[in-house]
Image (cartoon, rainbow, N blue to C red; front, side, top):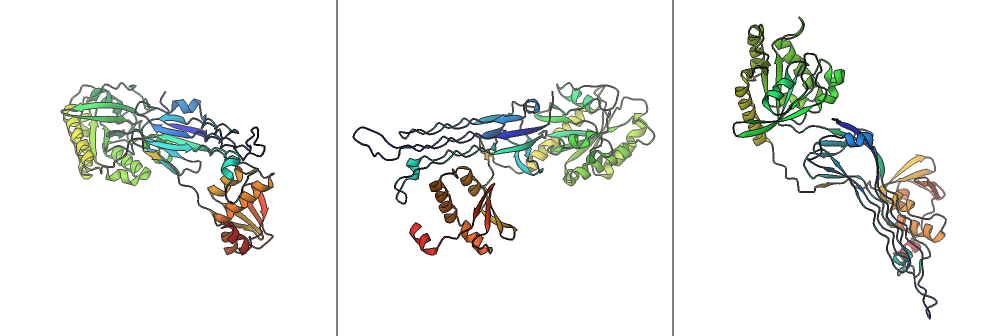
Length: 433
C-alpha cells in the first residue's frame, strides 16, 4: 500500500530520577551524600532511508514512544540511559507540526530529525552538594520527554514527472519507458498513487514519475489534486502530456495545456520556471494527426519542445526519451551542489527565556529551561524550591520581571505552578555570587 501522508504522535522517554542517599559504613556513621543521577530518556529519531518507500507503517502505528531512563541509586550508581527509538521514513519526507510549520525536510539519505527529545536524568544529592551547599537533602526528578503530534508528507524525488489530465496516457508512457507496471485502463483516474520508473536513454539513467491526473481546480484540492501536486514539486523536469484524442468538445491540446499550466502556477509559482517538455500522446489514433499541429503551436507559444509519441506502439518514444534525458542532465548540472554530511542531524533550538504579562499583577515565564527546571523540582521539598529560585535568579528571570514592571507580591506562573514574586535583595545576590 502506497501511503504518502501520516500523522505521528511521538514522545521521548522520561529521564530517570536522581536519588537522595548517604554513605553508610561501619565506623563512618556520618558519611557524605552518594545519591547518583538518573539516566537520560531515549529520543525519537526520524531517519531518511532509501530502502523505505511509503509511510504505511505509521498509518497503522501512529503512537511511538522511546524508552525511559532508569533511576539513580545510592553508592554513586548512575541510572542507565533509555534507548533511542529510530523510525525509518522514505527519502523526501517533509515533517510538519500541528500548526503546519515545516520542521524538517529529510531530502537526503541518512538525514535524521529529532522528532521528540528524551528527558534529562535528574541529579542525585551527590551532584547537588558543593561549596555553596555542603550537604543536599534533596534530588531532582527526571525530566519528562518531549511529546508532540507531527504530520509526515512524502514528496517523491524524481528527475522528471509526467503531468496532464486523467487518461492522457501517462501510465502507458511510464510502462513503455521503464520496467514499472502501473495500472492501465480506459477510464479516468486509473492511477491513484504516484509510480516511479527508472529509464535508461543512451548513457543516462533517470527516474520518471507518473503522477495521477490533474483536473481544473486541482490546486484547491479538487480531485485530490493537492495530494498529487506535491509529488511534482521536487521534480527537476516537467513533462506535459497532451491527449491527441481528448474527451468532450471543451477539451483540446491547447486548452488542456493552459489548464495544467494554471494549476501548477496556482500550487507553486516556481513550477512555471521549471524546465519542461510537451508530449503529444496517442499518435496512433485516427484523428490524432489533425490535432497535432495545435499541440505543437501551443508548445511553441511557451517556448517548449513538443514530441509526438504513441505509448501504445512505441512510435516517437526513443527521440522523446533522449531529449528528456538531456534535459535532466542539464537540470542536474544547473542545480547547486549542497553538501549534506552523512548522518546529518536536524534538531530544533531551545526556546529562549522570556516574560509576558497576562493580567495586572500576573506574569508568565516562558522558555524551555524554566519549564524543564520546574518539572525536575520536588515542590514539596523546601530545599529543592530554594534551589529552583536560585537557578531562576542566575538565568536572569528576576531581572526580566523587574525590567517589565513586576512588583513584589505579583503572581508569577511557570507552567502550571504559581509563585509570589519577592525580589532577592542585592546583598543576598552578592553572597550567592
